[in-house]
Image (tube, rainbow, N blue to C red; front, side, top):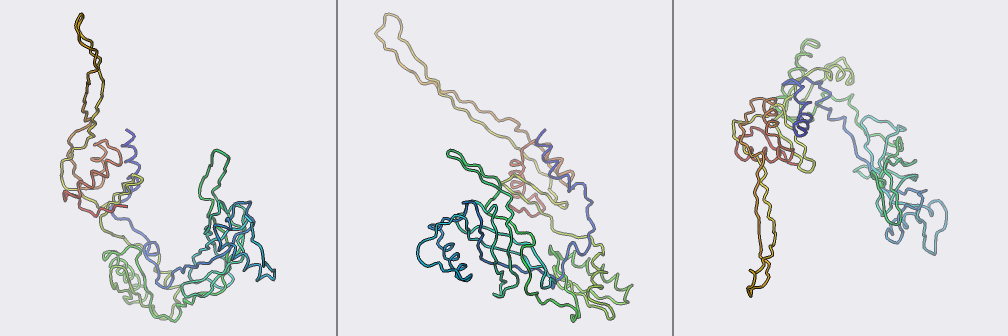
Length: 367
């Protein structure tokens, strides 16, 4: 009963959707010019309560600390620092499109050395660079850590990841990325999931709208991911895209089954079909029991007491039934899998066997 309930939960969302669900263009595609840029930097987190890097095992932390003090005009020559309240970290962030100088973004902080926790620490001013080597933001602020670690003499308890955290609004943009679209004569849309059918439907939906609004067909699909749209005269770039981004389009995609063997998760797409096959699924259990017996000699004989080996072998194969499975639609397929009454790992093995037999009309993705 629990297995059937689990499978029902896994596929409930998919079964409740229609065969083709309409989506807004803004949800299935994005502007080519409106892309994020990744930033990275190296910095120090200070103010830790004895949970920082051990400077003997992390020499780069000590070098960074000395360099920071020298930049602040404090001499640090001679002797070795033994502070345990400093940790070297890598700071990462995503620079959103169209952001201007002075705006703030969130940053992620991850320990680089052997620090045990970043809780209570403060990130010192850290420049963030892009792939071109230029500084686009500077991060600083208190680190928020969701995990914690507690340690005693005989036991250690760790929940979450205390060696990584976030600094909300911790970075200030110092330089914007030039992505002006006002001088562009066309817009380029990129589908999040490449598909020729979806690209054609997006172009047709835009052409239907622009034909009635501007009297011209302005969209043209270039490949399975790219749609190029000419911008009409007399309207701004932002206003034109705001008009077309809410158009509804029925997205499409290949039939696919995604299997995660580590967690036992099975996700079956709506268009997956299975040809008629017969499946036998059962678990063979063999038990071998050794029970030695003591054999006594007959009375008044000259025999000796001996131990005689005795082996008992039992074979059991419960639920080894043969079932017919035919999936002309997703609901029939899921009902057939539920009738087998197997666990998710058994469902995974069955799907792999059906794929090997050539009866699974879909792509099987193993993670």
